Image (cartoon, rainbow, N blue to C red; front, side):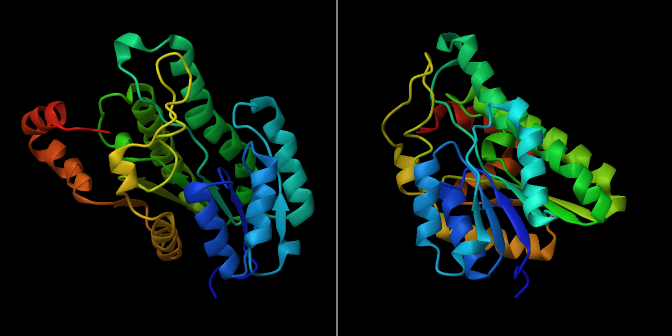
Length: 264
């Protein structure tokens, strides 16, 4: 098995896509570090795994705790000696108009989705460069490909991830380190339930689009295949994914469509 005994660190591992990835990699008998800001849920996920629970290291932290990240990476490298794959999943979404959203909400979303992700990546990078091997996977979104109403800061954070990791990919190619960006459409998770509204409070209900989205387990299978193949970018989901190409070749048409589309 390709992933057997590989050391894989997954953020956002306590629910949704991150949880599904934990199970998928565990079925391949990988060694896992699982992180999120919910320690009890991480323990639940670990207990649900079928193979070798002793190879699952629970490491809770919040992606906004930027100062703690270097020490956490030191803990992981001391425990496992290397990190083969870093899968950046952790993040938060948004449901509010630009004109109504407090700037503190914009900052919080960027702190989690962008700065938390790149600070962790930059802390892991020296070990990968030293070993001349590694793979960095990043969960972005179709919102990282084009702007979507009610998601201004979320879309900005995901666009920023594309700019950062496209650049990083070019810079670390010589060290045999790969970067894969995942841009899915709706996935059936609680991301909309937890999405921040204009004042920073959670939305507390799901969107119809998310309810009909891809199952996390199906996305996890796609992710494992894509990383194994060394793909640089993966756009997935339903008909929404074709918006990438409509925007590229017919930008005015795309603008008309996105204004009229129910994006919930």
